[in-house]
Length: 309
Image 1: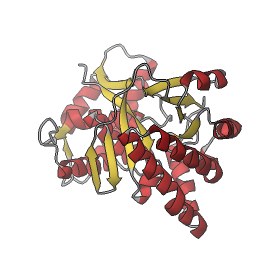
Image 2: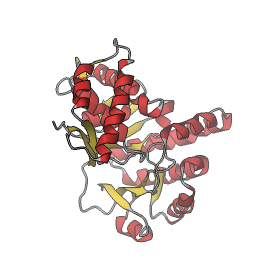
Image 3: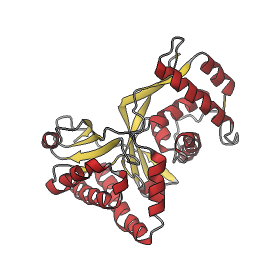
Image 4: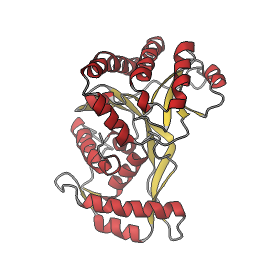
């Protein structure tokens, strides 16, 4: 048994903002992927995954059947045969490892699965997002459902607000382009729940709420619009402002040893960094108009190019 592949995702823009109904842009990242597999001879990883999937089966039993139902008998039989989630997606790195797993489980075991091959309506998208939000809450405490949705659809998703999202096209990559979006490896895992908790506590401050509404969301929304239009000049102007605001107001979400590197990008204009997901570790996202120059400055760090323009 080898299931279809489900890819990682990258939230290019919208981290934390989408909690407050800001825009977001999420894209599949097919360098990393996962699939449900069954093996009689199990590695340590396969055994650990199988145990986690057994715990997950107990959680799925508790989900309101009016929302979604699963063929749990089939699921249980597959677990007995050694089913596990074979994935190259790094966990705790902000690129949707649990989202891909949720999408794979829904794809295989959901009864009356919502079809997406034809007539992908807004209602279907919102229903899937709701289902995936409940399914993924097992892993994060609370989930928007966007990561599994992105993995399930394998399409870029434009988030207008909580109740308005749509598949979208993004500008074609320029393979010979000097500009790039890249992942910067912090070398440590991050955890979503504690970071979101810090953010929600900060949101109790009127000054922080004002900054989120008037600055953070404004620049983030502009970045989404600029990226989709291919307006590189405006994009990098807004990215610089966004990067500066994140460094000032989201310091707990940025590993300490990267504070100076973050500032260096803003001062030199060689690259701009932003959070990739909730932060606290994992990957950070970088944007540069001159990849070779950014690579030379960041030569001591591991970069993965995601998109070129």
